[in-house]
Length: 442
Image (tube, rainbow, N blue to C red; front, side):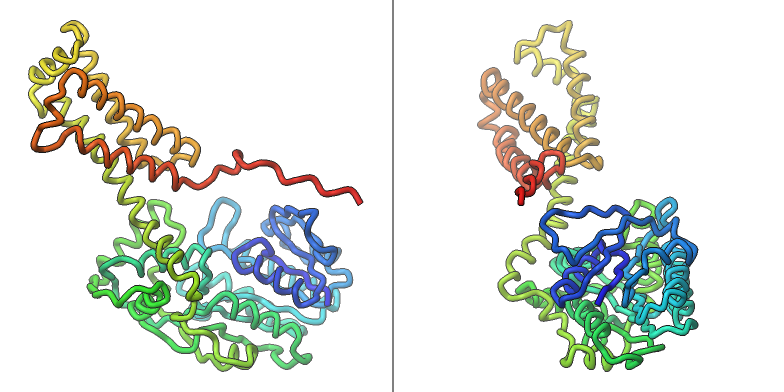
């Protein structure tokens, strides 16, 4: 079967692309930025197409020649520039579905989302509009409605795994959730493609886990999957939770904002009959989302997701507090005396004192600034060199500070170790990676 798959480079789309190829299908992979590789099979064809520009059936007809089925896996959770919910979720898919009807495409599957009929948010309304457009056409069409989809490398899964790994779960009350593993959702879509004609036509099929769970129990299940014991739960008042979601959205969070808060309160659950029939078994429960052999690695990644920002914040506070104290909270004359004992002449002492204050302030701000990985590695190196310089200078000119009961110099040692850890855990910069090897001549 030749399948046109939109959103083929996305979280779920990339897995669908691989699953379709493994099932023996020919795939036309549609993505905004198609990056074909020489190592990919001949049954895979990439098509670079911007969904925001493909809003009429005529723009799709040429790409549907010889296509047997279409799977639309395009989806965004937040709008950005021209990438709007209406354009990507509604107008472009509706045009594609109309083109399918004109071209005689046998089967169309729309990957929507569970609960969109409620239409509480712009995200839900746009998805629901495309669903209605598809089901109104004379096609063998099915709308699949995934609940919260879990995949270890997915943004929402990383967020919930990190949240679950906290020693205390501070949570608002929410509607029931029924998370589904991405592999089960993908397997269900592949099963739909090989199902008998019209078997699932005109239906909305929820792709859900085996049973609904409160948010707290979902996180406890993820803790169990990571090999962690149950954690105590602190109930957060709903107004405080709503305020936190709005603040997170204003700060640029792609997962937590006012809309996601509304959907969390609404809940996300449905009967699992459809996915069970497609899989020929019950979907896996959240306790089994992470294979046992992956539990240690998943737990480590989840904990790093919140301990590393905490480490960066504490490091920033060290620099900022040092700057504020040195600007005058600590007697300036005593600062000059210390500078004089290190060999700085009186004429340069104000410049050295306030120059160091300014540098500390800059380093504190940069520590929490959203820099690129390469720039952050340079920042950690600069801080380590500065601390090492201070340590050597004070050891030489003021060695008694090593014997101070508060340990002003010995505390530099764990700070240097923290900087080494931050540098070692920085993600690689794509510009630093070697180019892929050229394909061998045949």
